[in-house]
Image 1 (spheres, rainbow, N blue to C red):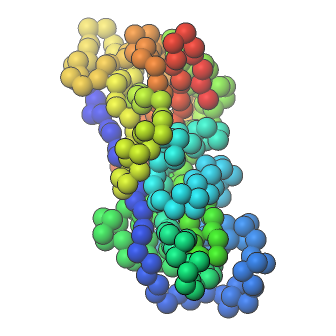
Image 2: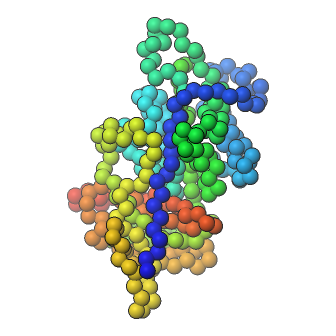
Length: 322
């Protein structure tokens, strides 16, 4: 029988309403004029807020990731003044994250506070924002006023399996944008996965969990048309699932053929304590031009965690990857 296949649509939502609730903060922070507040200072404060919420709920702290995808995303939202999980080039969050060298799975929160039409500030007086206050408003709203978004933001903040987080912070006098990219980093690869879709090798060490299976998802190449079609959606997910990789079976055993995707029997797929060694062939699978995302699913306690977002790019007569 086929193992159960897990497909997770990451709940990642955007906050639009500007609601402020009283929050206990260090008064010293408000004594800093806005122009003296560094970006690094805001990032560290954002990390402190997230980790305080996690600690208050019995969870461990997240490490700060250096991945720049969240910052790129925040700067673009400030420029377009359109809250979206898609970049204007059509990339989904995990695509941008991978382009900046990210290897683990991610979930994203996005929020905007302020004036969407800056022209109105030229004709009437608009309130100049306090970036620290806006940062704290957003974190509080994600934790305690998130019902409209089915508590998706809170779920990302309090996901017990997240290990790292990166922040994108961008603002001007009248608007503030926060992007949080939460990461699952559990695999330390001992060698690169490689560029050839006909011989995929995943060799490394797991910090936690057991290897469950590997899923392959397909997306067409992102375009500005993709952005226009999806920019207002509150959630995103992986592309169309086209294959699942399973370990070889003993003689006289077989898997039930799935209906909606191809089954790839790995040449090798073993875990020896924390060491994993996987090799499989995507011949006949990665044929259509586009992006193929390889997601290694781990079982951690009772959860299934996407531990990689490795991508292979297929173009006519061109094969490349990041």
